[in-house]
Image (cartoon, rainbow, N blue to C red; front, side, top):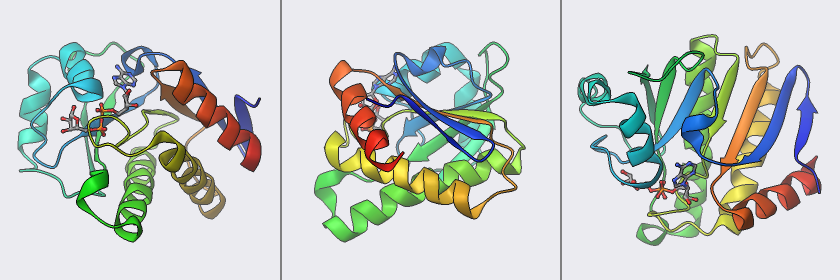
Length: 183
Ligand code: APR
Protein backbone atom coordinates (compact mmCIF):
# COMPACT_ATOMS: atom_id res chain seq x y z
CA UNK A 1 0.00 0.00 0.00
CA UNK A 2 1.20 3.52 -0.80
CA UNK A 3 0.79 6.43 1.65
CA UNK A 4 2.77 9.08 -0.18
CA UNK A 5 4.36 9.95 -3.52
CA UNK A 6 6.64 12.75 -4.75
CA UNK A 7 5.48 14.88 -7.68
CA UNK A 8 8.32 17.25 -8.59
CA UNK A 9 8.93 19.37 -5.46
CA UNK A 10 5.51 18.44 -3.98
CA UNK A 11 4.90 15.53 -1.63
CA UNK A 12 1.42 14.00 -1.72
CA UNK A 13 0.56 12.20 1.51
CA UNK A 14 -2.49 10.33 2.82
CA UNK A 15 -3.30 10.40 6.54
CA UNK A 16 -6.15 9.16 8.69
CA UNK A 17 -7.35 11.67 11.26
CA UNK A 18 -9.15 14.93 11.96
CA UNK A 19 -8.52 17.74 9.47
CA UNK A 20 -8.41 20.39 12.24
CA UNK A 21 -5.19 18.72 13.42
CA UNK A 22 -3.48 18.69 10.00
CA UNK A 23 -1.17 21.60 10.89
CA UNK A 24 -0.86 22.76 7.26
CA UNK A 25 -0.85 26.42 6.16
CA UNK A 26 -4.20 25.96 4.42
CA UNK A 27 -7.08 23.69 5.41
CA UNK A 28 -9.82 22.91 2.90
CA UNK A 29 -13.32 23.03 4.32
CA UNK A 30 -16.14 20.89 2.85
CA UNK A 31 -18.59 23.78 2.72
CA UNK A 32 -22.03 24.47 1.21
CA UNK A 33 -22.87 27.05 -1.40
CA UNK A 34 -24.34 29.38 1.23
CA UNK A 35 -21.09 29.20 3.27
CA UNK A 36 -23.48 28.84 6.20
CA UNK A 37 -21.49 26.28 8.20
CA UNK A 38 -22.77 22.83 8.99
CA UNK A 39 -21.72 19.45 10.41
CA UNK A 40 -18.80 17.18 9.46
CA UNK A 41 -15.69 19.00 8.32
CA UNK A 42 -17.57 22.33 8.20
CA UNK A 43 -18.66 21.96 11.82
CA UNK A 44 -15.21 20.89 13.01
CA UNK A 45 -13.40 23.75 11.25
CA UNK A 46 -15.87 26.41 12.43
CA UNK A 47 -15.62 25.09 16.00
CA UNK A 48 -11.86 25.63 16.07
CA UNK A 49 -11.80 28.82 13.97
CA UNK A 50 -14.46 30.48 16.12
CA UNK A 51 -17.34 32.79 15.20
CA UNK A 52 -15.14 35.23 13.30
CA UNK A 53 -14.90 32.69 10.47
CA UNK A 54 -18.57 33.45 9.61
CA UNK A 55 -17.67 37.14 9.34
CA UNK A 56 -14.88 36.26 6.91
CA UNK A 57 -17.11 34.09 4.72
CA UNK A 58 -20.16 36.39 4.79
CA UNK A 59 -18.50 38.93 2.50
CA UNK A 60 -18.61 36.43 -0.39
CA UNK A 61 -22.40 36.04 -0.25
CA UNK A 62 -22.01 32.34 -1.06
CA UNK A 63 -19.92 30.23 -3.45
CA UNK A 64 -21.07 28.20 -6.47
CA UNK A 65 -20.81 24.41 -6.47
CA UNK A 66 -17.48 23.35 -7.96
CA UNK A 67 -15.76 26.48 -6.76
CA UNK A 68 -14.08 27.70 -3.56
CA UNK A 69 -13.16 30.86 -1.67
CA UNK A 70 -10.21 31.53 0.65
CA UNK A 71 -10.30 33.32 4.00
CA UNK A 72 -8.18 33.75 7.10
CA UNK A 73 -8.27 30.93 9.65
CA UNK A 74 -9.74 32.72 12.70
CA UNK A 75 -8.48 31.16 15.94
CA UNK A 76 -6.54 28.31 14.33
CA UNK A 77 -2.96 28.26 15.64
CA UNK A 78 -0.10 28.81 13.19
CA UNK A 79 1.08 27.46 10.79
CA UNK A 80 -2.59 27.33 9.69
CA UNK A 81 -3.30 30.74 8.13
CA UNK A 82 -5.96 30.04 5.53
CA UNK A 83 -9.25 28.16 5.22
CA UNK A 84 -10.34 27.32 1.68
CA UNK A 85 -14.12 26.88 1.66
CA UNK A 86 -14.72 24.36 -1.12
CA UNK A 87 -18.23 23.53 -2.33
CA UNK A 88 -18.43 20.03 -3.76
CA UNK A 89 -21.35 18.57 -5.74
CA UNK A 90 -24.27 16.71 -4.16
CA UNK A 91 -24.07 13.24 -5.70
CA UNK A 92 -27.79 12.64 -6.23
CA UNK A 93 -28.56 16.09 -7.61
CA UNK A 94 -26.86 15.67 -10.97
CA UNK A 95 -25.70 13.21 -13.61
CA UNK A 96 -22.30 11.48 -13.64
CA UNK A 97 -20.81 13.93 -16.12
CA UNK A 98 -21.65 17.04 -14.10
CA UNK A 99 -20.82 15.69 -10.65
CA UNK A 100 -17.39 14.34 -11.67
CA UNK A 101 -16.60 17.59 -13.52
CA UNK A 102 -17.63 19.71 -10.52
CA UNK A 103 -15.74 17.54 -8.04
CA UNK A 104 -12.57 17.88 -10.13
CA UNK A 105 -13.05 21.63 -10.43
CA UNK A 106 -13.38 22.15 -6.68
CA UNK A 107 -10.00 20.46 -6.10
CA UNK A 108 -8.37 22.45 -8.92
CA UNK A 109 -9.85 25.75 -7.70
CA UNK A 110 -8.66 25.04 -4.13
CA UNK A 111 -5.11 24.41 -5.41
CA UNK A 112 -5.22 27.59 -7.52
CA UNK A 113 -6.31 29.65 -4.49
CA UNK A 114 -3.49 28.14 -2.41
CA UNK A 115 -0.94 29.05 -5.09
CA UNK A 116 -2.27 32.61 -5.32
CA UNK A 117 -1.26 33.00 -1.66
CA UNK A 118 2.04 31.14 -2.15
CA UNK A 119 0.89 28.48 0.35
CA UNK A 120 3.45 25.72 0.96
CA UNK A 121 1.15 23.08 2.51
CA UNK A 122 -2.54 22.22 2.18
CA UNK A 123 -4.83 19.55 3.66
CA UNK A 124 -7.93 18.24 1.86
CA UNK A 125 -10.80 16.24 3.36
CA UNK A 126 -12.65 13.81 1.10
CA UNK A 127 -14.92 16.53 -0.31
CA UNK A 128 -18.56 15.54 -1.02
CA UNK A 129 -18.21 12.00 0.40
CA UNK A 130 -20.18 12.66 3.60
CA UNK A 131 -23.47 14.57 3.66
CA UNK A 132 -23.21 15.09 -0.11
CA UNK A 133 -23.24 11.35 -0.69
CA UNK A 134 -20.42 10.91 -3.19
CA UNK A 135 -19.17 7.30 -2.92
CA UNK A 136 -15.55 7.41 -1.70
CA UNK A 137 -14.49 4.83 -4.32
CA UNK A 138 -15.67 7.22 -7.08
CA UNK A 139 -14.45 10.43 -5.42
CA UNK A 140 -10.93 9.28 -4.46
CA UNK A 141 -9.61 8.80 -8.02
CA UNK A 142 -10.99 12.24 -9.01
CA UNK A 143 -9.37 13.92 -5.98
CA UNK A 144 -5.96 12.35 -6.57
CA UNK A 145 -5.87 12.53 -10.38
CA UNK A 146 -7.01 16.17 -10.43
CA UNK A 147 -4.26 17.05 -7.94
CA UNK A 148 -1.61 15.17 -9.94
CA UNK A 149 -2.74 16.84 -13.18
CA UNK A 150 -2.65 20.27 -11.51
CA UNK A 151 0.90 19.72 -10.23
CA UNK A 152 2.05 18.45 -13.64
CA UNK A 153 0.52 21.53 -15.32
CA UNK A 154 1.81 23.95 -12.65
CA UNK A 155 5.52 23.31 -12.14
CA UNK A 156 5.81 26.79 -10.57
CA UNK A 157 3.45 25.82 -7.72
CA UNK A 158 4.44 26.97 -4.22
CA UNK A 159 3.02 23.75 -2.75
CA UNK A 160 5.55 21.44 -1.13
CA UNK A 161 3.00 19.26 0.67
CA UNK A 162 -0.53 18.14 -0.19
CA UNK A 163 -2.24 16.07 2.53
CA UNK A 164 -5.40 14.05 2.04
CA UNK A 165 -6.96 13.58 5.48
CA UNK A 166 -9.39 10.66 5.79
CA UNK A 167 -11.69 10.31 8.78
CA UNK A 168 -12.27 6.54 8.61
CA UNK A 169 -9.91 3.61 8.17
CA UNK A 170 -12.01 2.45 5.21
CA UNK A 171 -11.66 5.78 3.40
CA UNK A 172 -7.92 5.79 4.16
CA UNK A 173 -7.57 2.34 2.57
CA UNK A 174 -9.50 3.43 -0.54
CA UNK A 175 -7.16 6.41 -0.99
CA UNK A 176 -4.11 4.18 -0.43
CA UNK A 177 -5.26 1.84 -3.20
CA UNK A 178 -5.90 4.74 -5.59
CA UNK A 179 -2.54 6.37 -4.85
CA UNK A 180 -0.83 3.01 -5.30
CA UNK A 181 -2.47 2.64 -8.70
CA UNK A 182 -1.42 6.08 -9.99
CA UNK A 183 1.78 6.58 -7.97
N1 APR B 1 -11.82 15.62 9.62
C1 APR B 1 -11.63 14.97 8.44
N2 APR B 1 -12.64 14.42 7.73
C2 APR B 1 -13.88 14.51 8.25
C3 APR B 1 -14.16 15.19 9.47
C4 APR B 1 -13.06 15.75 10.16
N3 APR B 1 -13.21 16.40 11.33
N4 APR B 1 -15.51 15.12 9.69
C5 APR B 1 -16.04 14.44 8.67
N5 APR B 1 -15.07 14.07 7.80
C6 APR B 1 -15.19 13.34 6.54
C7 APR B 1 -16.48 12.60 6.30
O1 APR B 1 -16.41 11.30 6.88
C8 APR B 1 -16.51 12.55 4.77
O2 APR B 1 -15.71 11.46 4.34
O3 APR B 1 -15.13 14.32 5.50
C9 APR B 1 -15.82 13.86 4.35
C10 APR B 1 -16.78 14.95 3.86
O4 APR B 1 -17.93 14.89 4.66
P1 APR B 1 -18.81 16.21 5.04
O5 APR B 1 -18.08 16.98 6.06
O6 APR B 1 -20.18 15.72 5.32
O7 APR B 1 -18.80 17.09 3.71
P2 APR B 1 -19.59 16.91 2.33
O8 APR B 1 -19.95 15.51 2.06
O9 APR B 1 -18.74 17.66 1.35
O10 APR B 1 -20.96 17.71 2.58
C11 APR B 1 -20.89 19.10 2.74
O11 APR B 1 -22.05 18.99 4.81
O12 APR B 1 -21.40 19.79 6.87
C12 APR B 1 -22.16 20.07 5.74
O13 APR B 1 -22.10 22.46 5.62
C13 APR B 1 -21.66 21.27 5.00
O14 APR B 1 -23.61 21.42 3.63
C14 APR B 1 -22.25 21.02 3.63
C15 APR B 1 -22.14 19.51 3.49
